[in-house]
Image (spheres, rainbow, N blue to C red):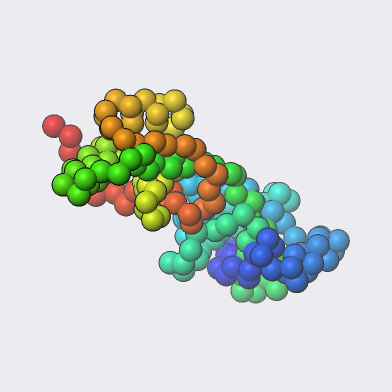
Length: 176
């Protein structure tokens, strides 16, 4: 099996690469793979291209694959494989009001407990906690409402792989 082990660049951010991909498409030297959002963060996986060819992907511990990334591998200099990542959303949670300093710690612990108890991966950007949409939106909203957070608001926003984690690092534990 041929292995793709390098990201050459991204067609959305590199105009010259985009033009090269368009040129190679005419020569049938470009194939496409479609990845689910959660697979884009995996560094090793097996894929089948739009042309029906099977490849392995074996990347270093770098960033998640993004929509438009171009993959290449040793020994196959002509073929480019372009990544298409299915779009997804994240729940963006933030405080709707200023809490007194003595309540901030409790708020953070309660929010962390809620997210961890649901095994929802998350990241923090400035004053926003982002957790990718892993289940139905209504269920996520219900979980937040059930925990009775006073002063929290949320919305669903589009995200790219790498903006939010696609999975929680799993630590062994048991629920009693």
